[in-house]
Image (cartoon, rainbow, N blue to C red; front, side, top):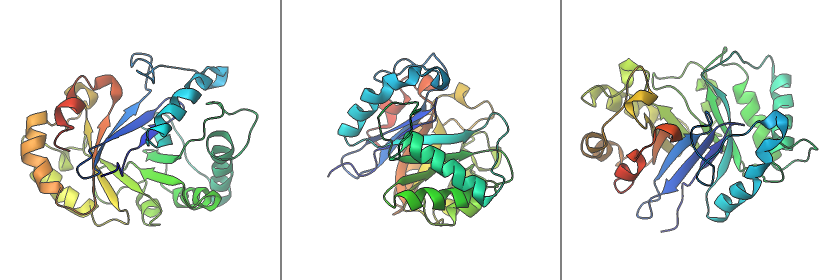
Length: 264
């Protein structure tokens, strides 16, 4: 079967890659680009958008796309203070993203002439208002644009609930880490209870978001590969909305994705 859920995400400094499992189209998504210690994008690398040094990724992004991998810009994150002030503000942000990273035109495209495939909403700050307006505005440029959301596992998410309810998100990769009430902690009871809530949202593909190593999530949620394969995946893969596993992040993936990819 052809790969159906390959995805790769980039946030000026974050990339998310999903490798397809040919037997069922499920995938592994992994964030990349947090610092200079992750290698090159081809094998992965670091750049400064303001200095124009990220254009080096243009050919590498196109190479990934030629293999059927989708590349999305990831916005937000856990650090800093950010928000949208109004629907008009959301529209202006959408126009900036469209012209600088997607199918529009700008003289200051940080990644050169590569055209990304969509946007990942990793919103962990602010009030949660107007992200639905941003999603609608982005889709207004191109209905085929891929949208992804990365909510925390407590249901519903405080920042992305309204946006996800638009039904515009192709992928929802839920962060089942740094959230003790709904993460794995030796058994999968709390995680599976939360998973069963998340598969009710308006998206066709729900991913299980996990840390790629214990040190990637200071507040917990790491699942040893064998536990994931034997205690968690058998229970969630039966969901028709199961899309695969998302990993945070490339820097910490020292063999974890290789260990689980045959079972995803």
